[in-house]
Length: 224
Image (tube, rainbow, N blue to C red; front, side, top):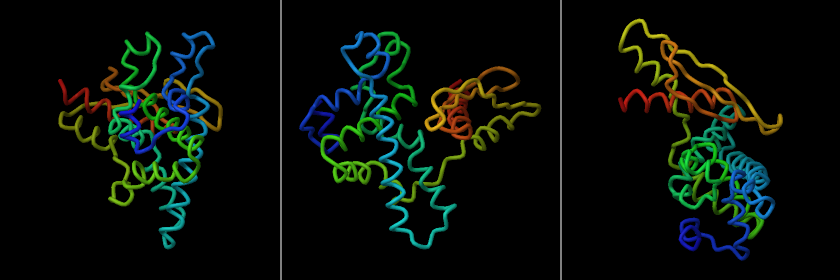
């Protein structure tokens, strides 16, 4: 955990908070009550992230209309952005997963990585207060805005352009499931090419899930 703390730029007074943030529900379920999952921390972290990013954009961009503020905030806090943070931290290496989830590739699963980032943020907030949480967000999230990296990547358009290299290709997106309460819903989408599945993804909106599915499909098609 010391190595992860160095990457985070934060040392926990209560290391148990960080351990909790890295504990997926699959591991908690296997422990039969001895461990708690990071789901509650993820819920808190999501709210803190949204508030801090919105506050930053409001204060630093007084001329931006609401639509642009919303677009920029969405690009900063979306699953894809959080996955990039997780990969920078190599967070998958530290996740505590159940045996089945671990063997099934859970350490690389975007939704698990993104949720873990939010859980770690909440753990930092509970351990060190809002100031420490802001520093984390500034270091790993807001620098993307400062660097001009907030424009969402349009994977759907890129995928469409890729498959149109051959005529007669039929690309379709299908909602295959959704879970969670209304305030924290997650959608699951599959994209098919000529009826065959080529990618799947999840997100906090149908549009985000479609983008993640398109990104997975691009990898599938380009790695053939």
